Length: 256
Image 1 (tube, rainbow, N blue to C red):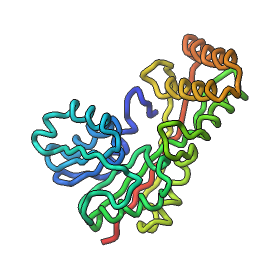
Image 2: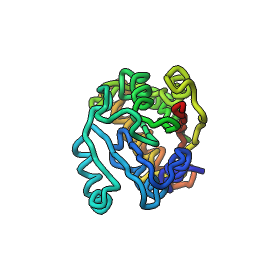
Image 3: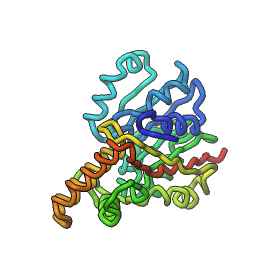
């Protein structure tokens, strides 16, 4: 079982990237830097990670978390718009690139994948992964309302997003196949399951995001939304709560 309560999926994805000490790794769209500890563990003190995000606030948080890594030159933070090509790096610069939960926000998705191809050294690898938000499952007494909330969340472009696609996870393999990579070397799905409903669990936060969107649109009665959330809390108290979501990944290798 993989869960956001244990972060096992992060370890698995970092392992799939096949990082070895001495490599240059690009964390493209690093956000809060949740994958950095796993990448550092694979590098084992030798090599360098470049964290790129368009949010200076996110990069500032990373700098605060890892001052020693920055001081010794094993971590670099760079602000850049991932949707703007070319990115500010030379050809054949990185050994590995990780792009997690980013590509749905980019209009030219093929362009982003092909840009990663340019940045990689021959034999370098790109691991692109994304939640498929439309695969979320809850054990809920309100089956139809749950369907509406999941689809509503998956289909909504939020204020902070330039683009969105709640079904992007299932499209990664096809995008990789149509890109310069010529296809994924590996592909797969991680099923993330949770049986705890608490603020540190992904399913808890997903439920809040979905109901917040529904409240803003006004398409569903607020009372029904509150009752839906309460039902999840009751199920958790009765040890009958369940949430799952699929995380899809595709790994491509640049030809030598």
